[in-house]
Amino acid sequence: MLWWGRSDPDYSRNGVLRQHLRALGWAVTDFSPAVSPLGDLEAALRRLPRPDAVWVPCFRQRDLLAARRWCDRQGGVPLVFDPLISAYDKQVWERSKLKDGDRSAERLLVWERARFARADRVIADTASHAAFFAETLEVAREKLRVVYVGADETLFRPAAAPARAAGAPVDALFYGSFIPLHGARTIIEAARVYQGPPVRWSLLGDGPSKPECQRAARALPHVVFEARLPYAALPARIQRADILLGVFGATQKAGRVIPNKVFQALASGRPVVTRVSEAYPAAARESEAVAWVPAGDPRALADAVAAWASEPARLATRSQSARDLYEACFAAPVIRAQLAAALDGLG
View (cartoon, rainbow, N blue to C red):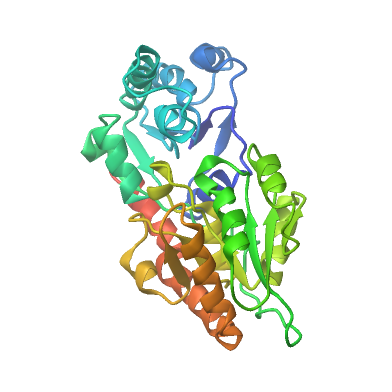
């Protein structure tokens, strides 16, 4: 497999899939073109050997055309694209930088449709995202396959629920990059209206909305901001938490994805409170390991956390249920089987 694009191989989605590709018997070779639109020329000059398939990883729409030209010149090497997100969705619906229907938005949509169309196989992280790719980006449904994001199980492993002194606050941990999808401001407002046993609302990381959240939380001593951690240190911080907070944004994308943090929390055996989403399998929607709240609803979030904090003895049971849910729906064998099915029939 030729991994084509200027990507971060250690990014969670990339790292997990590369592990599974190797487990399935694929040798993964990296090619990071100096100039994405000219990647095919660079590949030709470097005389890259013909692979069995080319993989363009997440966020690398700009690499697709050059990769397609090179694949065609090699006699039709299959091209797989794992976008993870849509540039059109991000700019129009997520960040509201472009207005739907405006000329600039339409140009972006045409641009992205043309690139998705060049892949032989398009990987989506959820069935909801696959439906968006088909309906909005006009990807032929027979090209689409679903492979969950999963978690790096060499890092995110279950641990015993943290021991807490009687009366000590329950630690409800959010971590992320403070983007609209995360809805971090909803967490701040939930902490403001919260009524229940003591809870420490911990928000870890950095990002665009963090300064706004810090200003909003100035009068809330039970809200604590923590600096971003190295990725390798994140599992230990998750294991010190009692409850993990997922995402609460009201954007369309937030309803189509299962965030990294949810996979990582469940893999670590920590229960999660997050927004309602059809992206999850039925087993997740029925598990006591996940509490579902409406998007952008601080009161519902506060009530869900209060309900769990009021039963601290059940948090250990919920932690076990979290790991059970992960094993059943999202663990390595599940992801690997999805990936094998996604690659089946190429070439």
